[in-house]
Amino acid sequence: MSQDGEIDYSQYSYRELLDTLNNINARKYPRNYANLQAALEKVGPEQRGALERGSTSVPVPGDSLVDGGPQSNPDVRRVKHLLAALAVAGLSAYLLWIDDLTLPLSTPLRVSLSGMGETLAYLAFLFAAVVPASFVLDYIDERDNRKKYLLFALFSESVATGLMFFAVAISATPT
Image (cartoon, one colour):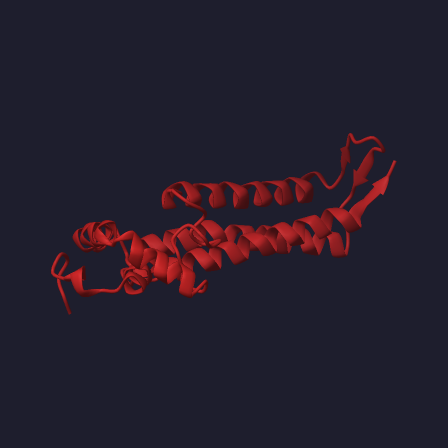
């Protein structure tokens, strides 16, 4: 197994460099990450253009849901997902606690959780609680599974949001 900073990226193709960039743990291998960034900067526009014209299935950083867009900071993305999950967990806990909420819309809606709506709100809370737990586990885990933890967190956040939406939708009645 190579030590940090010992990998020579000069012989890697542009595709291999991009694949490596998507899978490297920058916290665990900071010198390899810096060397990889330097190797990517040295790739000429003709090699980049040839790859982009030849295949659209190449994972380019910033183009996927996990990457979060161009020039997106991974820590900022994590904070955004964490805040969204905490908002869903807070809303579900609040609705379960007060059990009755009137939403001031054009036609006021009364949300009173009971039966299936209450069950969905509990599930939304549990799925939302998994998101910060996955980030903590990712931080503790020494293996290079950062992308898997992020995908799991995104899945849990999406499920929690959907469950909370359905809980409110089936529990809301016009007043």
